[in-house]
Image 1 (spheres, rainbow, N blue to C red):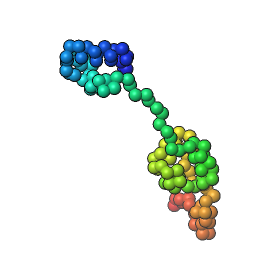
Image 2 (image 1 turned 90 degrees about the horizontal axis):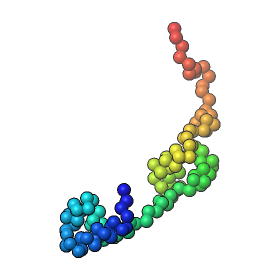
Image 3 (image 1 turned 30 degrees about the vertical axis):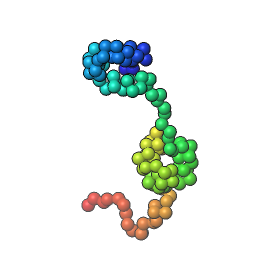
Image 4 (image 1 turned 120 degrees about the vertical axis):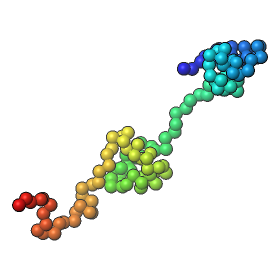
Amino acid sequence: MSYSIDFRRKMISTRKNEGLSIRETAKQFRIGPASVSRWINQIESKASTTRQRKIDKSELIKDVEQYPDAYQKERAERFGVCQKAIWQALKKLGLTYKKNSTSSESRRKRPAGISTKKTTV
């Protein structure tokens, strides 16, 4: 809950006029002593800002299209962020990490006569 500027000013002026300590002022106004101390130093609350994201979503999508088989670690190095940031951004975009079935590893043919199915005797 945020207290109004008027309430904060009233609390500070009462503290000065009555010569109260921070603890006494906090007890009288039923607020925390940390709030009293903070308001003495800065009566107005700091304006909140949104965090700047390092990963541009459109650039990430282009990167995924250009390098579909790249590991998250490789993407993280390209974007200059940690691997978890890439994971979170991909999750937010709804992109899953699946290797391309036509990669060089999966193109290898199995030797003739080797079956992948189990046979029961």
